[in-house]
Image (cartoon, rainbow, N blue to C red; front, side, top):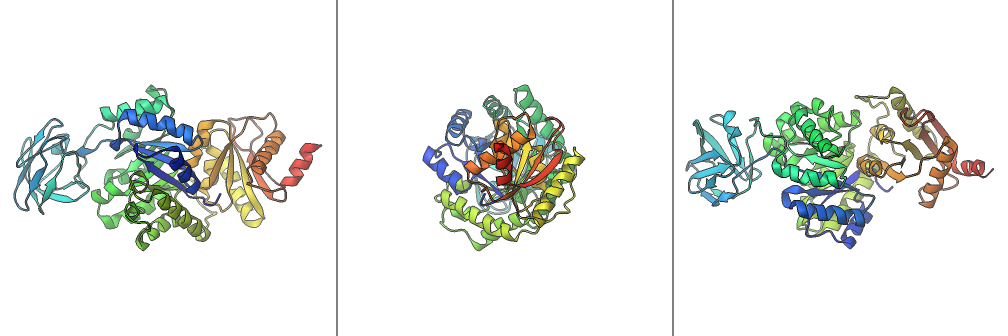
Length: 473
């Protein structure tokens, strides 16, 4: 591997031909994200089929819209003038016109109060609530502007009791379940109940897809521990998060969430505007480079590109830029062999994983081979953020895809073998064929001897040529 930090690239239904996908993979993409906010269920289903054909080893991540509030899709775009009041109602079928604005739900009326801010279109326009009525609020625009249909609405600091899943979300999730997509990134997760609701829906649809909780508001931050108890991983979605909380509070929130995810062995993705100027320009700003570097210094599992690869002018260059930054910054990433782990289900595996990474610091080990049935062994190893590549030998195709999101792990599919000696021999032969190791390399094997449900039970350190010589006898 040339980098340990994974890259998630968002794709548009207008641009995902075989040549483009091959170029992105070569440049360093590990996971492809499909954003349901910008496509139809039919388009998503077709994209999934094509991506499985073009990139069979890559993981797919479906991003739902979640419990969001928007301006109504019906009526006119409203020209607003600073100081001239608007009356705001909640009704998904409401028609916006003149000085009346409709939002897609009336649930905000339960908790909003006079003095609350209402931010439209990612904060482009700010309204202040001046009067609260029984079925509406009077708001005063702070600047001139245009309120368009279907635009995002944020009310910072005000919890809104919206359903975790919309009918539209369910339509997309049924397709994802049918096509065995492994990752669902659910938007605006507020509590563990939001995660449980999506998990129950997916199980009902015949899927055990892994749920990535997108943290986008103060509720999600406040409840991060209970969310981590149920989510497979976390996405720090800084777009809406930076609107819902003060911008200067986003960096410490990001740092706190990343730390908790690493301690919990949960993949963590940093998203939004990482190389935003590369949508229009061939090179990023110095600030953007520093932003990407900061995430890598924090040792996140993955960094994400959105518009840069979905509709930007320089998608390939954006991925190449991220890869170069990762390769350079990872050389200087501080080690933490005393990393404390939480949510430990197998204390023996934790001890062996910690010993594995320590051994790699004191011996000339070139690769770690991990025997992993469920991906758990590889994730425990990844939590310690070592410098040596982890080659995970998986027995199921979907586990191989899941591990595409874990730091420093490169997964391979391997048949099950009846003995540990056969496993080690065939794993080494596969890595030799792939050019990952040489005969003279020293490798470390972390595997199990007592059945698939008991996890790892031993560490073996040896030279590749000695393994091959023993197997030849």
